[in-house]
Amino acid sequence: MRFVSLLLAAALGCAAADEPHIRAAAAAFESGQAALRDKQSQKAVELFRGAIEIEPTFREAHESLIQTDLDSGNSLKAAESITRFLEIWPDAARYRLVLGRILLESQQPERALAQFSIVLNGDPGNAEALLGFAAAAKRAGMEDRAREALERGRKLYPSDKRFSSAR
Image (cartoon, rainbow, N blue to C red; front, side, top):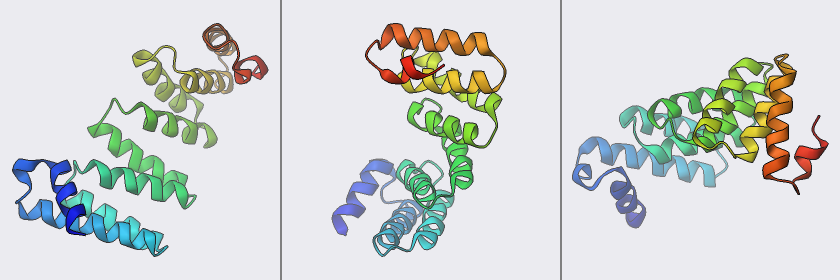
């Protein structure tokens, strides 16, 4: 337990490790992890939110909150948490892809399209973003853009059957 506290303090910034709010955030996070181990996901969510409230840049708490919401099947809460997370770490492509998929499942293709586009701006060959973009564009009535994304995917990933089977 002490090792975890030290590791968390290092992750939050060595200079601030002795700050009372950092210790409080780390304690809330550790309690959230313990709640997860005890299969108390709602309690874990509350504790992770508490850690984030204490220290808004506590990345591990954000990621644990997102994953707990996803594991609990609460994709809309996860989407809210991802949106807040991306305000702090806008280059987190992994979470943009997850948010894009949630938005697509929630019948919000235009908003999903925006998330996939941001990923593709940073990584034009990202296979997941190309597939997501194509699906979102098709649902948004942008058939030509969907075809272009799938064609680019076929060229970049000729053996990836997801691109050849998608229409």
